[in-house]
Image (tube, rainbow, N blue to C red; front, side, top):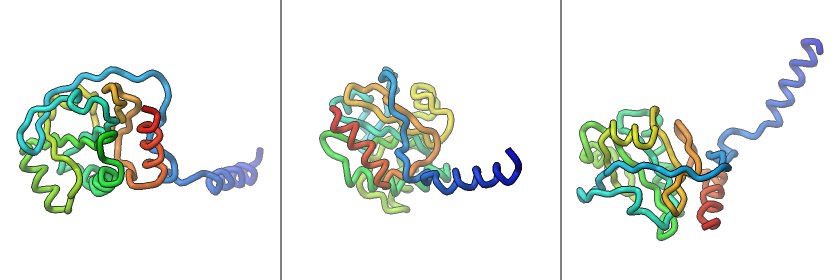
Length: 173
C-alpha cells in the first residue's frame, strides 16, 4: 500500500466511524462480578451500603467536586436520574470529597442539581472497595448488587445511546 492509499483508507474510516457520544457508554458481556460495599452516608446522615439498593439497577458514580470531569458530568447524571430514576433504577453518586457531605451539598446547590441523591463516603475506603483509581469511575450494577460493567472518565449520560443501554439492563430484570 502506498501513502496515498493509507491516507484515503484512514480518511474513509474516520468518516464512517460513529462519534463516541453515539455509542453506549458500557461494554456489556461476561459474568456479573460480586462487589464489596463500604458504608457510605446519605444527605440525612444515614449509613448505607449497596445492599440498600437491592432490587434496583444502579449506576454508581464515584466523584469529587474538585475533579473537573466529575463536575462536567453531574448535570447529565441529574438528567438521567430525572428520566429513569424510580423503583427499578437509581443513580448513586458517591462523593469522596475530604470536606464530607457538606462539600457535595454546596456543589449541588452551586450547579443546580435537583434530582440526584446526595451520598458521601470515605475516599480511601470507597476507592479501594470499588477499585476506583481514577475519577470519575462509574459502575453499572444489576438488581442483585453485581457489577455488569464499568467505565473510567466522564460519559454523556443524557444521550439516547446511554439511556437506551441502561433501559435494556432495567428491562432485562
